[in-house]
Length: 236
View (cartoon, one colour):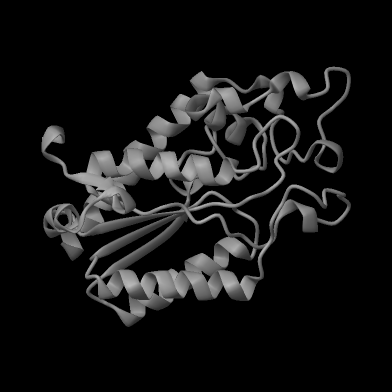
């Protein structure tokens, strides 16, 4: 039953609480975000906030321990050709992203987590592929454990969400989770939205709603829970 599921924030748990949860739910959730310019209408930490919320909701459904989010990313919008957004982003090297992911995974394996779920809110490439590649390598290294690196859109139908930057999908998620951080009125009313000017890649964010964000969240939790259920049967 749902009320029997044990979960918590790793950094808010005492050691005995951690072990109590982990003995039945040896699952670690690693929210991975970024500090990145998301236009004038969204906060710079959007990628981090959405993954932290989604990981907590997933842990409530499945059980396990949620780690503090990592706001380190490569391949940010400030490096895209044709744009000029030098400020408000903190970008890291691809080599560092790989190293940090490897060190996290190694230490989570040492702590005997059986399943590690890394949810990346930043989908820039090769940033996301680096995380996927590290997960693949660790699955080969530890065949009795499972490392799953994904972006939220991996388990959501395209009609609800595709990879985007500060567009309809991400903005609706932010409106659902933290509406006070979004300002749709700052978007232009008299012209088309563009990547070069507005830092938006994807569907027009001016149609974003918290209701659409809720549909995205519900779809993610349902589909990710089903996927994790199969993994749990094989590894726990």
